[in-house]
Amino acid sequence: MQESLVPGIVQALIAPDKFKGSLTATEVANALATGLRCATGTRTVRCDLLPLADGGDGSVDAAVASGFTRHTCTVTGPTGQPRRADIAFDGTTAVVEVANTCGMALLENKTLEPLNASSRGFGEAILFALTLKPARIVLALGGSASTDGGMGMLTVLGYSFLDADEHQLRGSGRTLTQIHTIHHTPLPELDTTELIVASDVHNPLLGNQGAAAVFGPQKGAGTDDVATLDRGLQHLVATLAEAGIPGAAAMAGHEGAGSAGGIGYACLLLRARQVSGADFFLDLLDFNTRKENCDIVITGEGSLDEQTLAGKLPAALARRTGKRPVIAVAGRSLLSKEQCSEMSLTCVYTLADYTNKDSSTDPELSVTLLHKIGRDIGTNIL
Image (tube, rainbow, N blue to C red; front, side, top):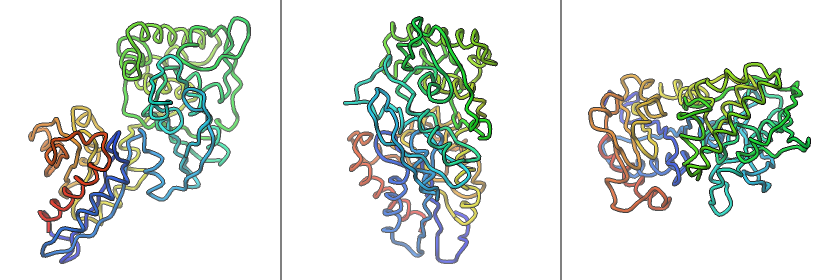
C-alpha cells in the first residue's frame, strides 16, 4: 500500500453499494467500519463512510447519507395500496426511485403481479418532487414490479389513457391492449425541470431483448404473459404515435427504453436525459473529492459478476481511484483473479468464503461476517 497521507494513520474510504436482499449500502459501510476499528496493528485506521448507489434501489438512501434531505410523500403502491415513499432533495437536485414507490419489494406478501402491477406511484413521487421546485430530478429506475411501459407513471404526468368507452384506464401491463385514445396535456413544471435517468440498462422496449422478454420473467411473467405484455407495449407505442406524440415510435428502439418494465421509455417521452447510473451517482455524491483524502478505498456489492464488468458501481469506482488500493467486499464473486485484476481490484473478500450458509437473505449473518472481514482487512493494512 502507498505511504499514508498522515503518518501512523490509515485513512479508509468505505464506499459500497447495497447487498441486494440483505443490507443497505449504509448498513454494509457501518458493518465494515465496525470491523476495521476493531483491528489491531502498528497504526490507527480512520473510516470515512460513503454509501453509494448506481440508480437502482437504495439511491434515495445513498443521497440522504451524503447530505441530502429526506422528504416523505404518500403514493400508490404497485398494486394500488397507499404507501409512504421517500425522495431526497438538496435544494437543487431531487432523487426519486422506482424501488420505494412501485418496486417488487413493496408487493403484498411478496406475491408477484406481472400483469397487474403499475408504475403510477413513481409518477406521483415525481409530481411531489416538482412541488419542491428542483432544477433537476434524478430518476432511479431499478427494482420495478411492473411492465406497463410507464403507462401508470404517465397517468399523473399529463397523459390520459382511455378505453373504447372513454373510461380512464389504470396503468398496468394488463390494460395496455385496452388503450383506445390518448390525450396529452403537458405539465408546465416539467418544461422547467431537467430530468435525468440514471440507469445502466441498455435494452430497447420491444422484442426479444425488450422489457417483457428480458425482465418480465423476473417479475413473475410466464411465457404467455411475456407475449401478452410485449403485444401491449407494441400497442402502447402505436397508439402514442397515432396521438401525435413526437418520437413515440423511434424512442421504443432507444437503448434503455426497456429499463424498469418500460418506465425508461416513458422517461424518454418526457425528454429525460439518460446517463450511466454508476458514474452519475459517483459524481452526485462527490466521490472524486472524497477519495483524495484517503489511503485506501473499500467498495463492494452483493455479487461480483459479469454485470460488474459491464460497468456497475465497483468497476466504475475502481476506474476513478487511480493508484490507491481498492479492496472489494461481496456476498459472492463469480469473477476470476484475472478479471478482478483487470478491474484494478487489489483483493476481494466474500461472505461466501466465511460461511457455508446463504447470507444473501440473512441480514444478521451478513453483518456478523462483514465485521469479521472488516477486522481482517484492518489487520492486513495496519
